[in-house]
Amino acid sequence: MWKRTAPVAALGMLLLAGCSEVSEISKSVDGAADKASVCGQALGIVDLNPNVDPQQVQSEAADKAQQLRDLAGQAADQDLQQNLTALADGYVELEQQRADRIGDFNQWLQQNLSKLESLRQACM
Image (cartoon, rainbow, N blue to C red):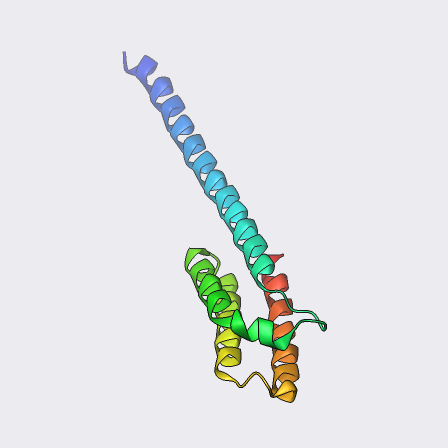
């Protein structure tokens, strides 16, 4: 009797181990999909290019900062969270600046283009 149960028990253990590996792979795939989704949304929020209108960017800064913070809260990847938070902080800084100081805006734009590049690297 024991001779018959041992192979069945061993097979059951192998199946459980296989299920565990499948579960881990599934979690990894879900994490990658989540990361891709968060990155896609973040890159859609951040619209930085040399031709951007400073007043428009400043007027939307608070909303974009909040959206980026919300995404950071959803991200499982620590590096991605940090990059999203850094970009959100940049938008908060812009919101607090005066819109008529174009030199400040150009400096802000350069700093945040650098942060955007860091986000792109974290998304890869």
